[in-house]
Image 1: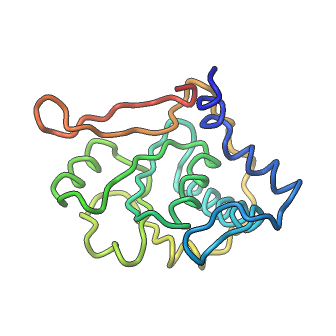
Image 2: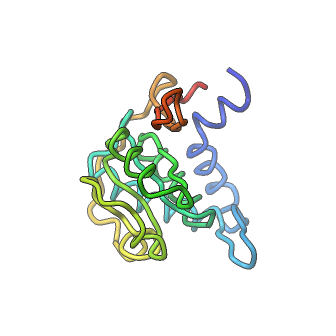
Length: 176
C-alpha cells in the first residue's frame, strides 16, 4: 500500500490521533477562516452521526455539492468517519449533468451549502445544508460505533463523461 493509499484509507483516524496530541493546533485554513483539529473533528463527528442516521455506512454513497471551503473539508471527513463513499459534484456543471450523476449514484444524502441549495437539482436523496441544518443540529444520542470500512470498501465515486457523453461512475476503494 502506498502512502497516498494509506492516508486515504485512514485520514479520519489520523485526524483523531492529532486531536489527542494537539487539539488546538490549526488543522485547516482558508483565507481568514480556520478550524483547529478539535473543532474539525467535533464538526465532522456530528455530521457523521447525522449521516449514519440516514443509513450511511460502508459502500454507501454521499454526494457533495459544495464549493471549496471549510464545510467541504468537514463533509469529506464526516463521510469517511461514517464509513461511506463521497461523490463529488461540481456546482459549476450544468444541472442536467448533476441530475444524471445523482440518478446514477443514488446517494443516501446530498451535502450542500445554503448558497447552492436553490440550484441543486431535485432528487430522492435527503439534502443536508452544511452551513444551515447540519451546523445547527446537535449530534443527538450516541450511536454504536460505525462499522470500520476495510480496504476493499469504497472511498469515493468519481463520474467521468464516458464514451457516450453520459456520466459514468468509477468506483475507487479505500486502498486505491
